[in-house]
Image 1 (tube, one colour):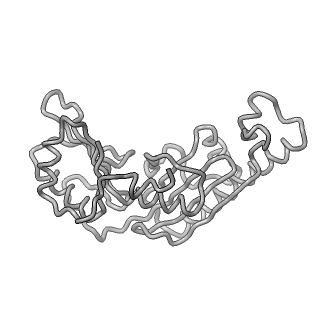
Image 2 (cartoon, rainbow, N blue to C red; image 1 turned 30 degrees about the vertical axis):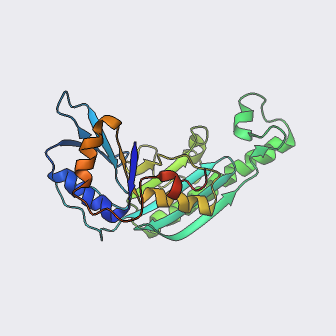
Image 3 (cartoon, one colour; image 1 turned 90 degrees about the vertical axis):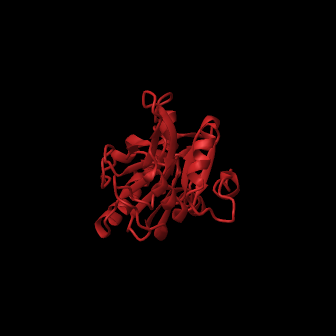
Length: 242
């Protein structure tokens, strides 16, 4: 089961969790708080924090904490990336490249594993693939040079990851950078509107639990000021592209 909350209510929920008599563990990579049961410390409830809400153990979160982040969405031949401050997009860029074989609908990268690159069309697509990732990394580099970046929210297939990190223009972070945050959501073909949709998702907190924990969750929710509108149905507010 899932319940979603805007930033203000996420802060209240985090405060309620901190004051409750329950063990917690923070997962920095996934930016989530795991509430543990008393028996053998098994996972009980997960609270995915809004990306705009930093977490410091033992500290009460504040609504005005500055969080700068980059959203990076990559699929074969399509990329949308942008720089955000506290959830507000201040700059963005969309890249498109001729990387997909039209008849087969297969990216040139995947085609190489089976057929090679002898034809002229293949060489063109490979050249555009190289330029595609160089352009992405150049824009990322400019963001990191101009701003302090706290997190990098990324959605990129495993097939394309090596091309991102092996580009002649290096990424301003490596694949083990602790700021990397894999977006826990299916992303459609990256365009500007899809990036904004992903950002709306990242700005919400998400409480994930099983039906057996329903009573415990309801007890937590009595301690926060819930909005009149319903934030429980993800498909109504955040998966508008599904």
